[in-house]
Image (cartoon, rainbow, N blue to C red; front, side, top):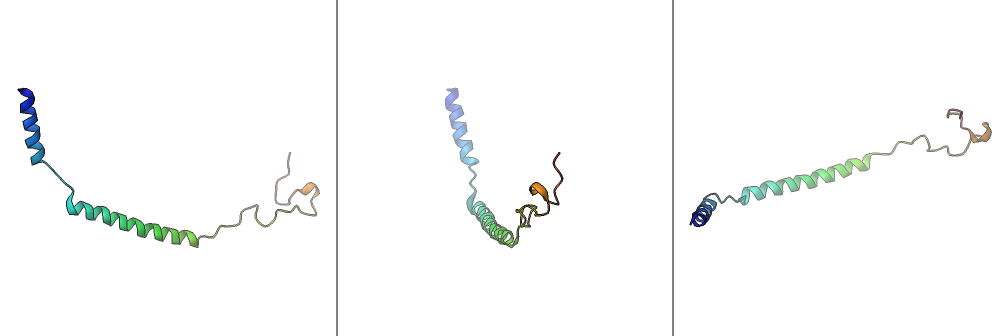
Length: 79
């Protein structure tokens, strides 16, 4: 008997509070998706503009001729 009352109450209350996202929810999610696509395209364009700066290893991998044992002039002596 009590289970029947609970089941009837649950059925009637779920029908009254049946909330669906509807068209507005779809439009919000679709708008966020479109904005994400444009942001990703812009980010990729900005990343392509970045040129890597030469690091300390670039352009001078050969040991200096003046220094003994291949020690470079800009490096600290080993102890």
